[in-house]
Image 1 (cartoon, rainbow, N blue to C red):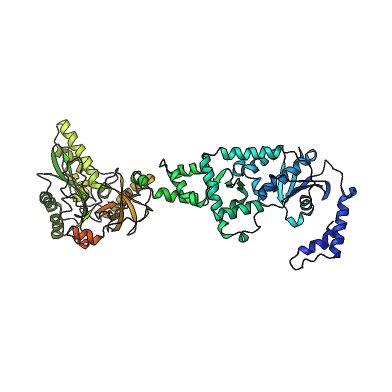
Image 2: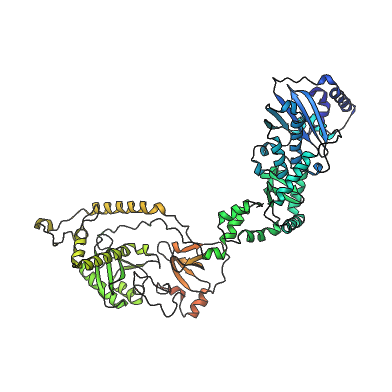
Length: 619
């Protein structure tokens, strides 16, 4: 056979000019003569493997049953009017179904090798039914009774089935399968969650969409063999071309409707009407509609939804920032103010020894706080660093002057983020429990504090030993030798402290998540309080302390917030009052903004009532 067809096949080579001569005509006549003669057909052998070679054209279907590379039977038929309008991949699969059903006596109950010159069929027969277009689904269901594997064979090597499909026998075909398929296709369309009006609108907009019209032509006529031969506007459909079909002017990907470009923005609004999250909205879309990049567009759309952003839940905690272990006792201290038993108290805690001092305050003005801090510093020395929250006493000009004159660095934590001043916050709770228990038991609270200061910490000496290198005499009997000053190993103490911090960080970080760094001019949402709604804002600059930023509202107000209370968004930049204008209105120079100006509209205090400021100092 190959020798006979050689004169014809050589015309298909690129280096040969296609000229039909007497040699080709003679080979063609000889080929026809061979095909119509009965001796060319082999007898069917049940013990030998079976191959069915199939093809389809615009007008017909062809199939050949083969054993040992010899034909056993031929078959062909013409397409009905409806079938002739099928997409190329649908006609090709119909050809496979035709071949297996026509040779049913030979193919049923036996593994069959099917050959087709349509490569996408290799993928479609391996996929689940839900991924296939409706017509293909019905054909694939009909093929379920056969045990076959499909292999792609280039069209130039599939000569006989191709010839049979182009010259089909015009016989009256049974329209039962065709009617069944069309009924199934219409059922799929009608079962979509869209009204008839929406389907009509999609059909109308699809007819106006140049890209989708190009796509329909490719679906009907067939896709090129190489991606670089595809028009650029439909590149993004190449990877799932085998799942596409055209039904009454609507393009389907499997059972999902492809939405025209002009309707996609409106469809995003409809998908997000219930303000579901990103993943749930994607699942909703996945149920019935599709277009290239739909997942990314859903993510972007919801990320800019002001309603969702405003009521979004708070950020998860960030990993614990590793604080530096002080080199010496009383080098770094934390301070806070707390309210207990109708009185305000000042607490100061040493970050090295965990030794604390408390003082009862006559009032909570900065001058009173400073006086008591001076008293404590006069006993233990002036620390190098003092950490506090952003209470009005600590961010006042008077306290700033005190820090400068006494020579220590003052660090203020972000509003509503007590972890920044975590040691003082923890000791507030511990001391309040200590005082409450002493009051309830009728015991002296100062004895309770003395015993705490004299009790060894975990794997370390007591706070008194770490601070003063000696044990304190308490009400518990102790020999004199135990009260003698004793110098411990500073390096050993620091090593143990660092190990403790590492263990604490490891435990804390199990349920934490790092947040990306923010840059100036980033659009953000921020919380006025830890569980409040998210308001719009813009990042002005980093606040020169870990995870702390200065932000500006659309009204020109300035706030300081920890990264935990900031949410980066993809919203368009808000029309803001310029900084110069805001500063002019408030009679302030932006370059001279201090923590006092960055104070929130109210200050958090441990169980202490606070009067709201008369003016909003945020801007």
